[in-house]
Amino acid sequence: MAQDFAVVAQCHAIGTCPVAAQRLIDISAVGAGRSGRARVGLINRAADLAISPTSDEMQWGVADHWSDPFETLLSERGDCEDYAILKYAALLEAGISKDDVRIVILKNLFPNEDHAAVATRVDGRWLILDNRSLTLVRDTDVTRAIPEFVLDHEGVKRFKWADQNRQVGG
Amino acid sequence: MALLAANEFGAFSVIKKETDAATGRSESAARNDGQAAQLFGMETEAVATGELPKNGTASRPRWLKISRWLRNAMQSGPALSPRKD
Image (cartoon, rainbow over all chains, first blue to last red; front, side, top):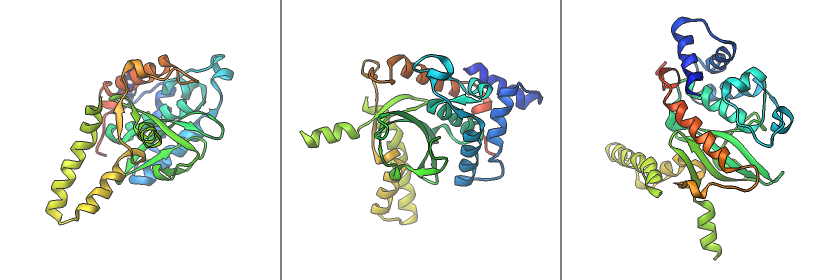
């Protein structure tokens, strides 16, 4: 995967670019000249419109397949985690700090399934970028889903919500 | 395991307290800001490898793969490093 981003670095350096890398740069660039929520919103929208929702079963013939951004951009298809990974990369490429971007895994209640989305911190508040809604939603306004895990450059972490509730219930 | 989470948010709290002291902001306002800075208003703890979920679609290889991907992405040189433009 690091090779993919090395390609992006070369694009910046020499100006010629493979299609997928250029698409990633283009998605990030839609936020150029903007800041804060406007920048994130434009990048989110561009990523959502760049690919069509397709299940891993239909696209790859397997239950689960995590694509890197280039693979997603070349196929122009993907499911929730593919959207999330693409947005994660696009936000970083746009200059947002790695400390302000996460991938979150939620347990959706309707339908009952795992779901991936991106969280990014803007002006001290976390916004959720969910491919199913096309809008930016504050983390505290997320409904019908239980946050379970968060992934970032440091690794996998678990929200302590479940443990706290378990203690209260017990 | 909780050390990582404490590091992540603890550093933020220290900086905020110093800033708040300098600007005269109240303790309750600082606390609210701290809450807002926590994703979903919750603390997190690092997940040990043996604790990775195995049920449903959240299979263990999946978690390991994405975790590795994110770490690689962070080590990939200038293209995805924060820029100041």
